[in-house]
Figure 1 (cartoon, rainbow, N blue to C red):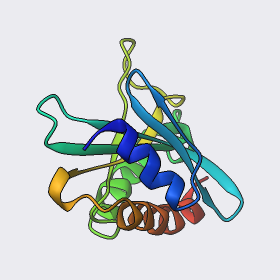
Figure 2 (cartoon, rainbow, N blue to C red):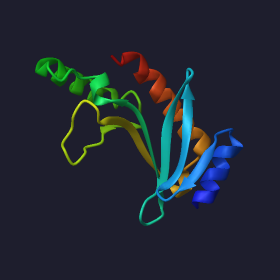
Figure 3 (tube, rainbow, N blue to C red):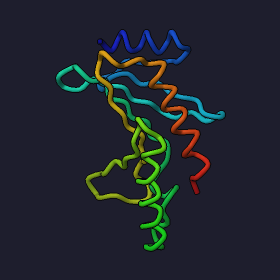
Length: 135
């Protein structure tokens, strides 16, 4: 699998895609909102990795409410069983995690099992489930 093949596959399904240094970038539309999707190959080239930043930590967690923050964090973790094969993650920055850091959906598939149409469908389903729960 190459970045060119990934780009062509996305375009065949109607997605605009661009090849960049880190892989292929596209967007996914969910109910009129667009979210960025980054697609890359791992170092060995045998897995295709997907991530989609769809919110910030502050959309789920109130910084000044420690108890609510803990509840929100546990709620997000619990949703992983409902949005499989994607999983929720937070991108930590050098300054530590704060309310502006992105919350992402991540997944990886072996090159042999990566069917872009199915992956994008799984991603759309996960986003449709999570978006109504954002603050």
